[in-house]
Every structure is written in structure tokens, then in C-alpha cells.
Image (tube, rainbow, N blue to C red):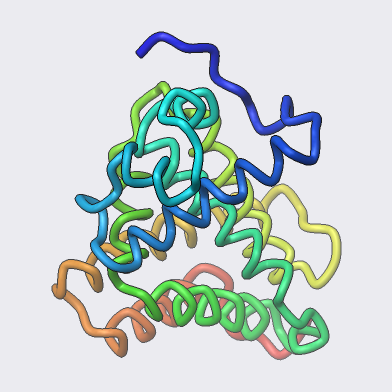
Length: 201
């Protein structure tokens, strides 16, 4: 379907932003019940009460839908994080707090997480903007946790590695190749090996 797609930055009116929110809410509700395969464009349009053509103007595919939903979910987790809980301590403790918080949040609804993660992993170049937004957000969450302030370039590099390790372990959990306990231990080890557990901040 060849239509002009509206970027998020182009949503100038409140009605457009509300429509986008309804679409993402519908996507997440459907994915929560049936996983990746259940997310069909017509089903999303019906639940969001928009025309299919309108849906395609906002999101050209289910991959775009689900990756955008993942980005919004990370944004919500970040916004709800109690920064005072990460004040002080070592970079290890602060980063580990953030990693485990994200881990628990994503493990609450396996079907939704499977759908969003599957879309993220298999997204092609057409969804590069959405994927980039997700990567920058998770890297920022981890880097800011480490820094307890403004992150350095090295901390952003470490955050990118941790993000990759976190994603691979999330996939292992989703495919039942690792338990939640296994994932927690692996991530703890990865963080410890990368930044140590020094007493200094």
C-alpha cells in the first residue's frame, strides 16, 4: 500500500496524537492476548476505531506498530522509574537496579513482550527510525543509571553492550531456553564484568 506515512514529529494536532495513542493501545491489547500473530492491521484498526487506510498513514506495517509500541513502553518505564532509588551507590548497583527493573517489566506479559521483541529483532531498513528510537532510549536509560548524572561517551558505549546482552537474554527467556533466574544471573554477571562492583561512585 503506497501511502504517505505520518512521522510522530508530524502529528501536530491533539486529535492526531490521540489517534496514534489509540492505535498503539489497540496494538498492545491485541498482542497481550494473542502475541505477534494476532496483531493484524484490520484488527488493530477495528479496535482503535480508525479506517485501515488511516492506520497505514500512521504505521505502514505491524512491525512499525510493534516497534513503536516497544519504544513507548520503554518510555513509560523510564518515566516511572524512581530516580531517588538509584541515588548514591556504585555504578554497578545503579545499573543493575535499572537492568533488573526493565527485566521484570518485560517479563510481566510474555505474549506482549514476544510480539514487540520479535518485531524489533526482525525489523528491516524501513523501520530504521523506530528501531533507532528504541535503541537510543534503552541506551540512555542504562547510561544515565551508571552515571548518576550526565553520562560519558564510554558509559554510552557500555550501555550499548549491556543493551545487546539484555536483548539476547530476553529472547532466551521468551523461547524458554533460560529461566527468569538464569537471565537475572547472566545480566548481573555481564554488568559486573563490564564495570565491576567498586565501592567508589
